Amino acid sequence: MNTSHQEATTLVNEGAQYHLEGDLMAAQQKYKAAIAVDAANATAYNNLGFVLSQQQDYAQALPNLQTAVELNPESVSAHINIGNVYLATQEHDKAADHYSTALQLNPKHALAWESYARFFVAQGQAEEAAKAWHQALQLKPAHLPYKTELAIALAALQRYGPAIQLLNQVVQHSTRDARAWKQLGILYFMRKDYGLAEGCLLNAQSIRPKDTSVLYHLALVKLSTNDAQKALAYFREALLHQPSAIEVRVDLAVVLLSQAKPSEAEAELGIALGQDATHPKARYYAAVVAHQLGKLEVAETLLSALSEEHGAFAAKASEYLNLYIHQK
Image (cartoon, rainbow, N blue to C red; front, top):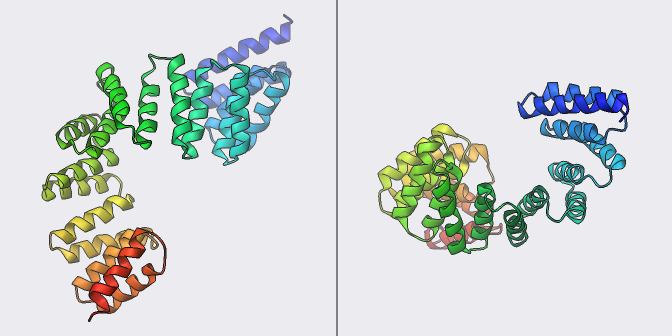
């Protein structure tokens, strides 16, 4: 081993240590120094590209990663990192090519399967995602996050039983895993087992008290058990932590409407439509509220425009027009 290569290896190792400690700028400097000493060091280019991608500097990350592959075409890590960059920049075909290459080079590389699984998740391909997560889990059976991710993919395929079984395994071994508790609670809710759903979601809330999704699903559980007041409290708490959560706000408005509080519902829907004026559910219920408040022209305008579109709320708007507006 020549002196320059030894020096570069030392710099790469120092950079990796900074990287592990979360000091990305210091790591980047070490990797650049390694390249300056040894321009043929594939690991330095790969690590530098990885750091740059973590900083979302994809334009700089990609050429460094491509150089790493040119210097070492069999670098599984470099192919994975290039795939991740292409995935982040929405170049999905190129991302798939590099993930596939990584797995051809090493079919037993768990991180390659993980990356491919995340690609399929991003593409909305739950069946393929489940297969990839299964492969990753086979290679690292004790890795609990893989069980959680596989469970989520199975749930998307409506395979609730196996998904619940996996998530129960996770929380038995890691009682502070908020994500697993939340997903388990959501699955129990979908199966209408509201007692277990609430227990799991409360566990998740105790770990992540500001998690909007947890609070939202707790509200849905309370609605399902006819506790509208508690549901309203959870909706409001969720919005306190994330005011931009439009689905939460619209559902809050719907509950307010059901509680004969149309003015409060109107205010919430006004905020929601200020965030997204095209939101079908918000527009529909804004029309319903307007009708209840005697603002017939507003209601008819909203419903008429919505009825000309496509989707469930377009159909509901057309039905409402025929039943309550055009009959007047």
